[in-house]
Amino acid sequence: MYTAKQIVRLVKKARKLRKDWLVIRDIASKIKADKNSVTKWVNMVFEDENNITPKQIENRGSKLWVLKKHSEDEVKRIILIYNQMVEEKKFFINKFTIKENYKQIYNEDIKENYIHYIMQKHGLKRRQQKILIKWKSKYMNYPENTINKLWDIIEAIDFIWPRYIEWDPNPHNFLSRRYIRPDKQWKIDIIWSQTTLETITKLTEDWISNPLPHILKIDNDSAFGMLKTPNAIWCIWIFTKWLLYLWISPIYSVPRSPWNNGSVEWQNSVFNSLFWKEIFFENNEHLKIEITRFNTEYTEYSNLINTTKKDIEKLNIKYKYIEDILREKWISKDDITNIDFIKKIDKIQLSCNKIYILRKVERLWDKWWDSEKWEVDILWASFELDKKYINSIVLITINIKTNTIEIWYEQNWELNIILKKKFIIKNL
Image 1 (cartoon, one colour):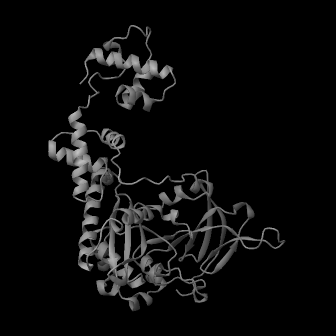
Image 2: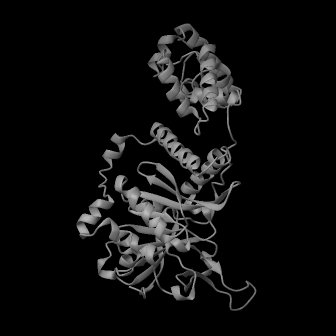
Image 3: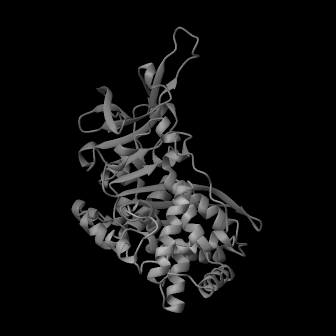
């Protein structure tokens, strides 16, 4: 810990560097102090800059014991823990997991920001992070605010492209699942094939121990109910019907826009870089063991940074599990995973009435043609919109109960309806 005189010298030095137009981060790095403390110091007002006392600093809201001088031993410990985790082939090595290991080994606490600083200084990073294009969703008026407010529990799922191993000519398929809110969890499972039945079976197993989401974010894969055939005109298919039966509203992303489902797509990229490219699999059993370890390690890492249980309890979210639905509807687990049973579900039996679809407004003909149009396609039905919405993303709501379709446009965090029409699902 610094003495009172040392802190006075740090305050004077920080204020002097600020006058030289240095940013807070650079000042904190130069004087080896905490950024929050530096921010307080440079914003303080003193009558005499040359006569600053410890009492004046305390009276202006800055405690004298907040700073801690880190020793060389701490740096060596952080590097040692990092190297041990690399040797143990841990998947998730970052400031959160290193802090947890540091606490268990040395029975001392250390700041995450300091660990991050040491990792950057000594080049202790396994891979470069991608630079995200943050303006893209804003430019296309992606209705982010509306989607975030739809319901309390949101989950996203996606298939990972088939992977091949040298000793096995058969493709290895994976289903990736991630809760987005309120508590971030993920799981990646091996599946036999990328089909509707396989997806239904895996999700049913998962929702025995994990809560049913109110919203499920999915892409336009045919296994998820978006069939691209002339027979699919104004129709919904098995997977969509299955979700609505379970009180779940699907939200389909814009085709060829993986950033719409960015949370699970990020998970897939982590799987690819930290798991698939790092391990040589000897056989199928080895693959199963390693993917179990990968899921377990992520859960441990996720628990270090997730929203605490107390914060989640404040939201007063009512959780439902698959067994609750089975009891309410007087059906068995075998029924809910039976395709023939799902096909027979009619409109009256559906518990949820809304389907959400995201679509980009596109030009139908060449822009120089007199007959050019701007429209969106939903279930092989086209809806013409005003040309001012071109290249924007709109939120489409199909209400099965009222037999209507509504197209919404979000601008400046507000949702505005731009079209409402009669729309009857033919196969219900």
